[in-house]
Length: 255
Image (cartoon, rainbow, N blue to C red; front, side, top):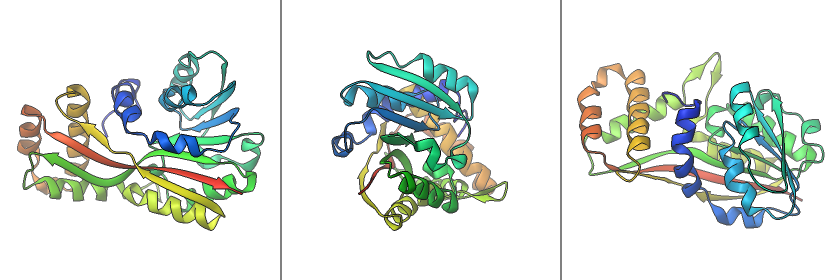
């Protein structure tokens, strides 16, 4: 998506993310939770959603490969009893040693950007350290727009194919990520619970809805340039539809 990792885009999506995440999974996280490592933390929006739901003092390790986003995340966790440190690096480099004394590992909107091998390795690292994992907002590949348009299905299919593209020799999982993560964590010995966590977009969130439409259709057009989607996109932007974007939240617990 356009601006997928920019502060502007992440700021636009934060309210929709918070509304979509499955709160009931938090109650299933084994406690006490004192140290949390947030993978691919971006601006820290997951921390701002989760920290108030956890009792007692907390120490957050914000991990990301973008130093600018890390600086923002560390400066914007305004909760009493919460301390923050940053870790510059890629999620694919995570080791069991990194999770030593960690009570929970989290991420948001990240698994679909990984490969099957990378998710398998992530599950193995969590298993080796027996660290519970709460992974939210993985793309599920389903989009519903109201009112419907005959071209919706073609756009969805092209977008999903784009999400599964090969980049630098890495074949991204895209909407296959939730099922791959469940399989990998169960094989690693975890008990896995999933919940749907759909985005609800529309005229109530006009900026986010318009930006999401541009990114969704833009990726589809890149995948299928012969689809001719300029008129479709303009029509959707002229009259914003109600949109449901499918995501999946996952909690994996060891022991």
